Length: 320
Image 1 (tube, helix red, strand yellow):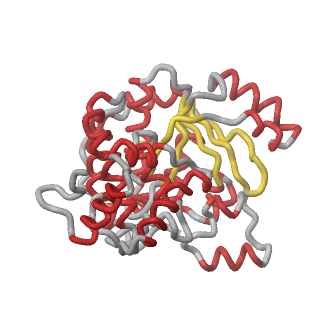
Image 2: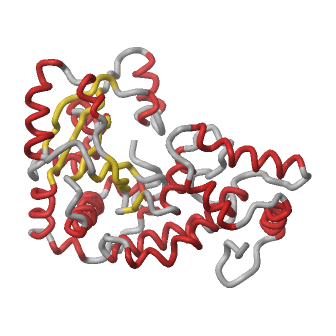
Image 3: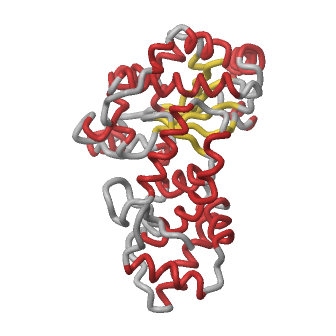
């Protein structure tokens, strides 16, 4: 297995993990397959957890996220040669390489833990998808190619279903495929408070739409699109511009935002308000048809300029 560090050998603890993986009979392609099999379901992480336990049982120190970074590195090696051929703008090619470099940092370095046995595994799942070219960085936002599950129609307020169907099937063009937006993990998410960086993220996605004619548009369903959240948290105004001002739409709500949607993270006051029943946010479906997004991007080519902003310095902590 190749080193996860450029221009030098692995630190001893990582070298021990690499050698131990070899002794367990895991080839580089098999390591890549483990990463490629990771999905949002927790069950998909079990093979990596089992590998970690096997290493520990063999006396190999396997703390923090060292194993996870070794596995991600194998996927990175597989994906590096494919980046240039991806139908995304050059700025996204560069962002992918920068994110790969971050994944190759020493275990326990700045940023969220990538440990598969950590309490929160969202960052590791996102990393697995990115290292196998299933998730793409756009700045403070990421996207995956997905769509709207048809079962979501059952979550909509009954009186709003006809209007929602007209927009989704008519103006948007169908339920899939679409770019589904996610907030990036730290430290990139800190740039959510910088209006131009959020607009630049949407611009990159719109550029990718130009290169992928089969994609219907850009969409997301989250509490961040709830009008009540917009009123309470002004920093998300730019996040909602495409759906309020640029030809998209806040289509309808899908019921109460689940706790797993992230609105309780990073904000103890909001958690306390939620537990007292004072904060009741809804998951709102937002959609931006490809035609509107592309027209906006063509009229805003100034956003092509490379940003000099450092998301790590955008704020002392992620927006709350």
